Length: 85
Image (cartoon, rainbow, N blue to C red):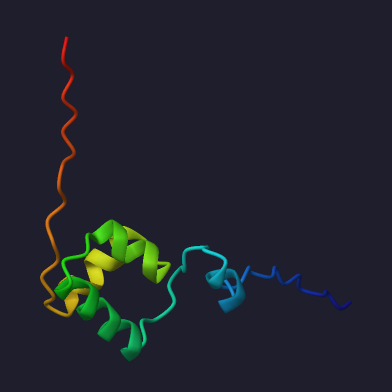
């Protein structure tokens, strides 16, 4: 008696086309070009949120990669809302 094992297919990582449409990447290695772009954005004073948006990566991914590469990123600025009566 032969039994066929069922193989469950896993969804793959987002394609580069999906990335271009703004989907965040998941577990896709950083390229040397992206590392350089991260350095450039950090030197320009861009916030982590801005860098993440431009690079189509999560804020946590940007912070993590910057830390690993010893890149100092701008501190987040709290926006104060002044309410006057």
